Length: 264
Figure 1: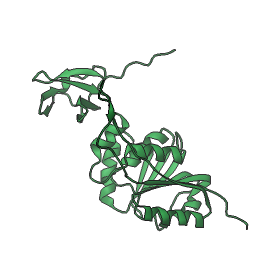
Figure 2 (figure 1 turned 180 degrees about the horizontal axis):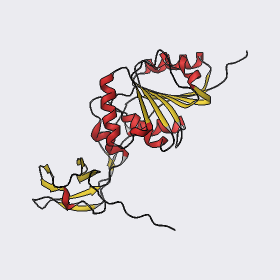
Figure 3 (figure 1 turned 180 degrees about the vertical axis):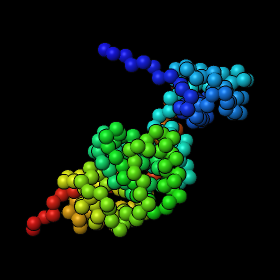
Figure 4 (figure 1 turned 120 degrees about the vertical axis):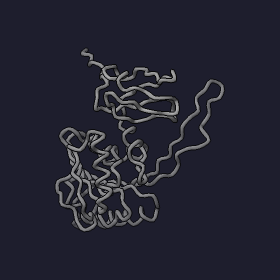
């Protein structure tokens, strides 16, 4: 079995400096500079050329761990100007949409690009995301966040109102995270390939009801709505139990499949 060489920290790349579960920092490595924290400063020169996972002491002798950033790190550390899609929901959106490497996807409601970043990660290197938003300032922010994650080549940002129409056709999926998804549903059949998927994320059940009604009116099948709740565990010998606080309701995920119109 071939073993891949360990990734090394290079100038211009990002690193997640880990101090504790609650204290992590996503920073760009720049030669000759330092990163200051309440536990002292860390020299980037001390980590350049070393493998991710190495220990780096601050000038106060406090050890940080230099980790390779995960997709969730880019999302949570870069995109807090609007409400972002949580990983628990993102994972299910990806699963229900059926997308993967090479998929072509229309996304509506770019925001600051949290979900866009995740979708682009899963469709690369041959796939593409066409992401619509009516607010140009959000698209500018999303572009910066996609660039930070190294995913701009897989996304086309579009300053258009998707409720008026979708430019693309023969798409594998249409994924919606906006206030009025039911207004987009009538445009989805012409954008989707046969048996393509539509997935909508909505925070309120009223939005879900209107969306499901629109899906039925437009000949979608296999319509399903779920809610995902996540609870962390406190794991310590003799004290293991569910944590008091949890990520409860964030939204409802509705999925459906395109079908030919009934001849009845």
